[in-house]
Image (cartoon, rainbow, N blue to C red; front, side, top):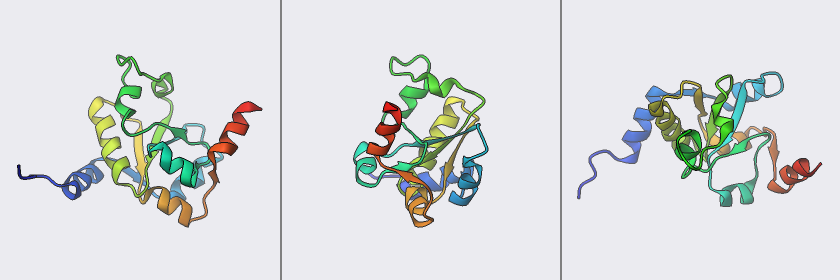
Length: 140
């Protein structure tokens, strides 16, 4: 079977249809914009290895559509908040572009992603928390 649309084409199509923010744009909003909700869609192994953006919700890419859909048995009510802008990120910005496009296709209008993903987040020395730090905050 021949692939008629490779990943590069799919990502390019998604990038053309979704809002893309730079790390700097997101960091500038972090402390004073209550509508911003970062969503890390990377695999848990990636979070374990490198941490995540401070304050980010973890919603694995493989479960995202199920967590967003109110008719799904896996639905997470956090995604019902229409006052929030859900800004997705992954490792490099490819998966998050595809995921943001999928959520738009589902009807979400309050979704965007970070171009360059967590790699750019780390390179810019933006705030990162480990999973242990996150757990400690929850336990307080």
